Image 1 (cartoon, rainbow, N blue to C red):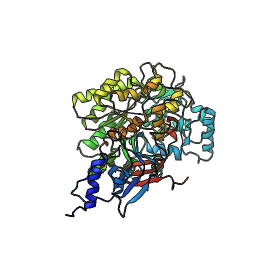
Image 2 (spheres, rainbow, N blue to C red):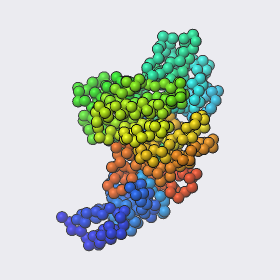
Image 3 (tube, rainbow, N blue to C red):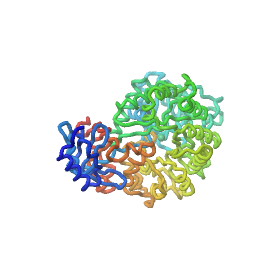
Image 4 (tube, rainbow, N blue to C red):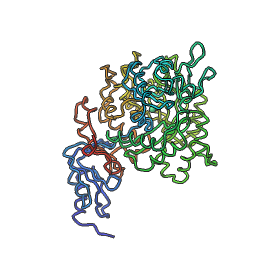
Length: 579
Ligand SMILES: [Zn+2]
């Protein structure tokens, strides 16, 4: 055994006695050499007491120590990379709890992008321009209509633009869309088509489809005839989306709506899981495949979690192969099961919404939740309105009653305003709320005048009741992906049009940072490894061009990541990034 050098030993004793932030190492060990040392900065640790330190040392992919500059510099050796922060702030890597990388990257790279466009004429103009450069017969996909009117357009509008291409225009929320006649014909959607459960194929008075398809099951009727992306295209879209996140200081992403059934191929699921596991992406990735029906749910549970003979026809067969051959990697990438109960905007499950359209009956939903819960898995559910949240709480409580599990930690995605009556139930059942204060900024002006609207995204109420909260940006369903908007809006609560939302639901920037780091880590059972800068945790962190804790609230959205570090490696550096 090597003996400890006296100078090192004295340094360690001094460090341990003067700085509680520096976690003392065993005095029997030789002082380890750091691979990376960041010093002379403001290290916002988001640890249990919200400590701010000056420096941080990393060894390999883990944090070695956090403390004062002299303490931490003592870990520097011949092979260490030293970064003088010159006063800059460092936070834990931000974790986006709700995103969909394949469609996000596809929106950015390939689809006709409609975000921010209000008029139907302009939408049609953009699709016409795309039609001109698209070979006849090839599918045209557009994403991002923002109008909340289901009557925004119909197939006749789209037919005027092109009859030579099938066209599908999807609303920004992903909850409904408009197809032209060519797309409906290709998909075999006609007078005889009935509404798949939980959805609507709108018909005109003569019984002809209008082109409006509401909710995923109706959209699938058309989406399933769109050729799936090639492996190259899919990898490119995921790379692109991950790189966009990395530039903004995001180091982990939860993809909780990956469509393995309905439209993606078995190969694309395989490719996505492999890519996520490869370590090649600049973000860590966890995936919650979307299970649209009870049958899909039972199949997924059977394929992955029952030990039954695998079924090569299952969309999750190859993901199951990964689980059987490399369970540790599977665990690292697998998040849980995503389901949905209501829609969005006009179809969301609010108590006074006569048009609320639920995707499942309460009994079907209970069976789906129960199957996932019994398999020991986390349910992540899309539920926007207060009735949707109540329905989910009923299902979670009944699953827990029939099969008690410690800390199932099911999550509700969105929960824009669960209602006071649900807050104590959320708290009691240990449910995590994964939500989006940035929605206030981009969509606050569209949310109508209901008495409770000013309280939407009630972060203060959640935190006061110790309800765990995670934050995510939800691209491509939401136009922006930069987490700075979430941090800003958690505090400011003001729409882009200047509408002010209840300041009683505002939280501090320190609290907001905690939700975007530890809160999101907790939502994926990763709080022991991620979410704060503490010795032993994975070295995911971001150097910022300004300090969130000292800048005025209005400047939070302008903060830029100077360096993004994942597992001790610099994966993005603004200085060297291509403009
Ligand atoms: Zn989403």
